[in-house]
Length: 302
Image (cartoon, rainbow, N blue to C red; front, side, top):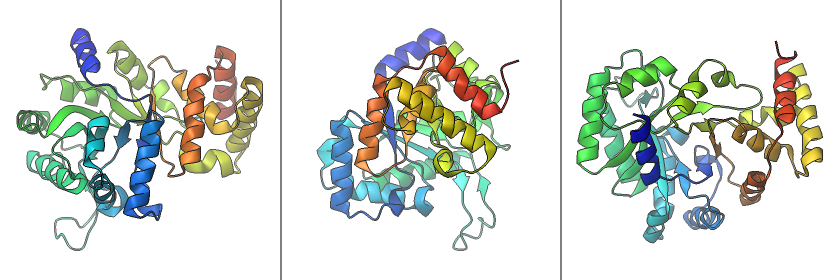
């Protein structure tokens, strides 16, 4: 399986950073401004974009698709990632009385068809199961994936927020390897580095995708003892390595992990994106990495 994953990795290349569009509905951009932003981050080498059907209350994919439709040729430069299986409460739908998960074949296929229509594309490069579903029938998911692959609607598949056992369960039913697990990694929350998730991905030579790298902004504004310790340490390291801001240190810290996570950015400010690209030039020492670890944990290593 490791060799098979390596072969798939050669076919599917992500950019070193991923532009996340989960807050697109909050950016207040016109379609033309959205297109300009897309073109700008493509010029910076960020060709992978991250979506989910639910983002922005089911609006963000359509907003992105509206911009892409202004210049459809850009599709050839993109790797489009999207997700499914979360059903958000909506009074318009009687079966959605509460937020819940749905990995049934019918829901996966319906979600992909909706995403294709909203994004205004013919296929999706990578589809992820967004959250582990206690009711997931791995055989049923495999049937849905096979059908979508055969129809040319989805090229590759992965998961998000899966534990190692959940990842292995789904993989056991698939002929095609899962190509990523999208998980939360930031200096305030990096449990996946200790619970076996990143170890499993390193073993399989699969790059994780890291979401919430900046902890939703809490690293910059939080007032807890942990926030202050981490922010102080990141500021010290920024000075040591010549970084302009602590977010550059954060991206370098995440990329220091040996599973080689691909960081997802969420900013609609192109200057913040340019700053993140600069982080690719920084490498933290082992001691600098563990200083952030200690600052986050509040104690030294065992």
